[in-house]
Length: 157
Image (tube, rainbow, N blue to C red; front, side, top):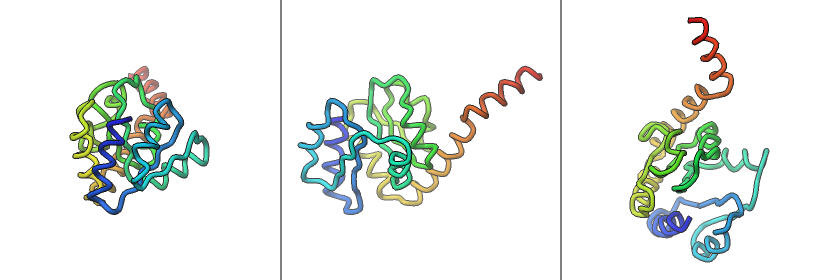
């Protein structure tokens, strides 16, 4: 999370239309609050249900810089909400992103690469819309219902 904090500090100095929303309360929360206190940032704590859906619905970009997550369900939730995602090339979440289409995959542990991806999206609302639309469509094809239908189709053949 320190990479996200560092990249966002730099981004917030160059882009005036950004506001970071951090959802959750992991072990880095206090460190994040301290390092981001001079930036436009909101910490919501743990959210679920409609509150979490509201945050997804109000977001433009979802950044998940984990290098150790094995799956990253939040990446799927963000894409299902029509939000392009930024993930690293380490860990499981990258398996759920089509780089350049549903989001961006950056080098793990590389704050400059993360910043570059964030700047690319922030500077292009049209790209955010296009990737968000692709992300939503991608997730519609990856639903449980679609998986069951594809399995049945496979057995029929």
